[in-house]
Amino acid sequence: MSETHFGLIVIGTGPSASTVAKKSRGEGKRVAVIEEREFGGTCALRGCNPKKVYVNAADLIDRVVGGRGKLLDYQKVKIDWQQLLQFKQTFTEPVIEKSEASYRKKGIETFSGTASFAAPDTIRVGNHTLTAERVFIGAGARPRPLDIPGEKHVVQSDDFLELPDMPSRVVFIGGGYISMEFACVVARYGSHVTVLQHGDQILNSFDTDLVSQLSEYCAKHGVKIYTQSEVTAVNQCGDQSFEVNYKKEGKTLSVNADLVVHGAGRVPNLEGLDLQAGEVEFGDKGIKVDAFLRSVSNPRVFAAGDCADTGKPQLTPTANEEARVVVKNLFTSNSMQQPEYDVIPRVAFTVPSIAAVGMSETQARQSHDVDVHHEDTSTWGSVRKTGQRCAGYKILIDKKTDLILGAHLLGPASEETINLFALAMKFGLTATNVKSTLFVFPTFASDVRKMV
Ligand SMILES: Cc1cc2nc3c(=O)[nH]c(=O)nc-3n(C[C@H](O)[C@H](O)[C@H](O)COP(=O)(O)OP(=O)(O)OC[C@H]3O[C@@H](n4cnc5c(N)ncnc54)[C@H](O)[C@@H]3O)c2cc1C
Ligand SMILES: NC(=O)c1ccc[n+]([C@@H]2O[C@H](COP(=O)([O-])OP(=O)(O)OC[C@H]3O[C@@H](n4cnc5c(N)ncnc54)[C@H](O)[C@@H]3O)[C@@H](O)[C@H]2O)c1
Image (cartoon, rainbow, N blue to C red; front, side):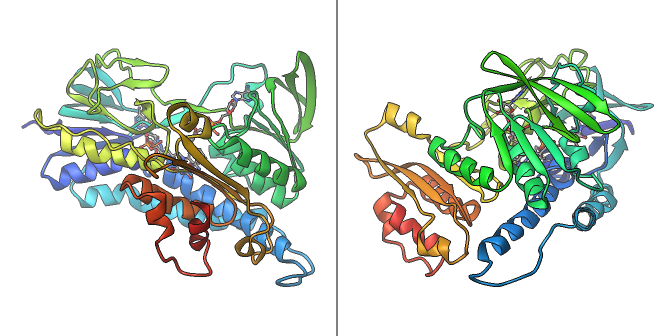
């Protein structure tokens, strides 16, 4: 076999690619991995993990402020942005240092540079031309081009997580996960925050009533949210100051900012791959794959995670589940597997967090005779004990089968408690089963019995 011929070439080193590369190597394949940035991928270096460090700081502030005069007293509590950046780097730098070596230790050959197809079985990276029996693409996503004047002034999430300090006026474009998570942090730091969302609702994959409750809480804690507001331009007015124009109800309005952040969605990162040369079909939503995550046009190629057009949310658990399946399917043509997408919980790590699994109220009502259990739980003992004041739930139960169709949570620990609902839904537990389970008291999990 030639030195440049591999059983498998893996493009990217995020959650999907790392699983596919390492597991396939474990099964004895000769594997090459190609990464164009630092080895480690978005989740570990520029997404979930570093973001959670920032959110933890904001959450701590919220808890301390909420507990003032009840649980504790203090003169002043504040986020030190530089300290926070340095603490975040204690999580990301070891990944940057060790990730490439971890592939090599397993006998995987690593290449730095942008991978692009030269032929259906041939990948170029720098001066190297590699061939393979199979190619896996785990190229992830990148911020959606805004196509507005002044786009170059807008900071993307990668750069936001590297800022050495935070200015006093910050505008977020879009009101989805990235904007709302960062907005909660920046507001707790003490800056003036504005979120401009072009639809009716921020966080549109979460329950409308709980999102309204969260929005009110955010407004009280320094986050101004304008919906129906589409950003149309960013004009530079001074060295580091900008005027953000947006359209609301037919009028053009503006807000001033020292920093403008992109939170307007992410698109598959297919630039540079030259997919045409690889005969790999793709569209705006990513690489076109069949139910087994194999390219519909080039059977040597598989794709998963944020760059694959699966119609599923761009989340690490979906990327991991797809990678698990790709490992099974890469080198077999019979009994290929499909990802188990039946229950995908989701959480926006706002302050407090908001979580969901399964159907929305509208979806449930369309297809089932449904019992809706909905309550603002801000005054429940479990919440009051924390000193915080923003919590609620909505649970959707099928009247006929007693099965849980959807669960929506807001408030302290909702990012953990939602996993109980995911487990119950995945394994078909009824609301009565959940109600009859003894949970440790006093915990947020024990509240679940009162919700179903
Ligand atoms: C700010 C932020 C916060 C997030 N928070 C969460 C969260 O809390 N929970 C959650 O579940 N998800 C979160 N996500 C989403 C999550 O990070 C992604 O869904 C996940 O990382 C997708 O994994 P992946 O395997 O598709 O690729 P990625 O992790 O995106 O990795 C792709 C890799 O491929 C490389 N690459 C791309 N093209 C090429 C090429 N041509 N040649 C070589 N290398 C290439 C890239 O440099 C990158 O390293 C967050 C995302 C962001 C941006
Ligand atoms: N906690 C998590 O799991 C987490 C955290 C961060 C990111 N992510 C993943 O990354 C993806 C990308 O995050 P995101 O927040 O960029 O996207 P998003 O899809 O969550 O939200 C983007 C929002 O921006 C709005 N928008 C788009 N263009 C606009 C404009 N010109 N003016 C005003 N509003 C505009 C859209 O209506 C949408 O509501 C998410 O969909 C999610 O899959 C997940």
